[in-house]
Length: 302
Image (cartoon, rainbow, N blue to C red; front, side, top):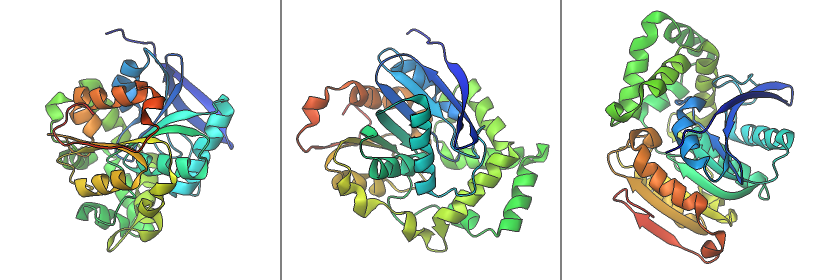
């Protein structure tokens, strides 16, 4: 397989210095990471898709290299992405989002429907109330306590917290390349990223789980474009049933579960993930003009 040159770039978006990477030429695939993953974690995915597409991976405000903005809610983040695409002169994208990034690209498709031609949600939040108790605990941290926690974790001794979070998010860590581990560790040591992530937790969660005001499940029927939902079978953060229910509500959907994968399913099971995503991205859109719901709970092809 050819390794494509990845270009690191910055642009100003609404006054924010915005970090992104791109590779390849053709229709645009936009990759959006979640809170617990660095934009560089998309590099293997970018390399696979760059043969046929222009692939762009962007850091959200305050997370992994892009300047922060006051409002970290999903609607504000989706608006940021729309402005980002305007700056690049991109009219339409195949949007792929993981975890919180999945919620953000769902909002992008809802708020700016002509911007998204296809949608992929990977272990996305905002699809149900249930969430791991650790996420609830982080959501309930007062702002002052969250600042102290982010300061502690960014210190050398905070590596233990990184190790614990990796246990929660990954099921097959031995399959993750060393470069990805290094990017994850750098992300975990960034105080700004940690502060923003904890702010997002407070925005999106409450004592009962995921906050009702971020749930988009009932609005998914408005997304009348081909959609793919991918979930790790062993995702501890969000239950698989949320992904399955979301796929049923999307008018033109496909659903797959990756056996043996955790919340970071595209890292845990990269080859299996690319079998699914690559087929979806490169498929002739005319073939998805009628409603379809395809379940592949074994981690195979859609």
